[in-house]
Length: 86
Image (cartoon, rainbow, N blue to C red; front, side, top):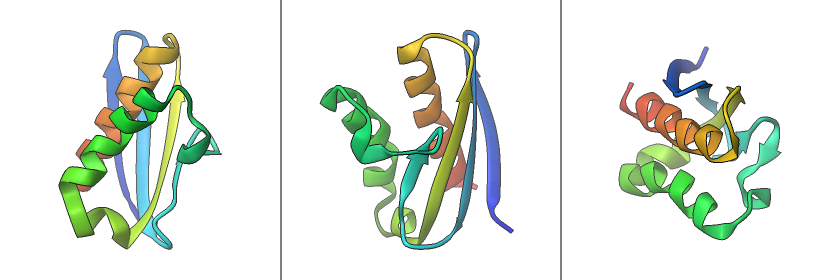
């Protein structure tokens, strides 16, 4: 069983789950590498960079609903950060 957290920004609601795995990150079933523009991808990766080795121990899956594009991405980032703290 993994770690699950929930966060929200304006109308966007994100839920992040961390499970043991090969350190892949998916947002709404898409790999993080596919997210564009690049600065948004770097924004999402920031909590994982700060967490260091902790972020490479498992798979991170984020589901985001509602809000606009940027609100979803920022909230996905917040959910990842909260999950890593758990």
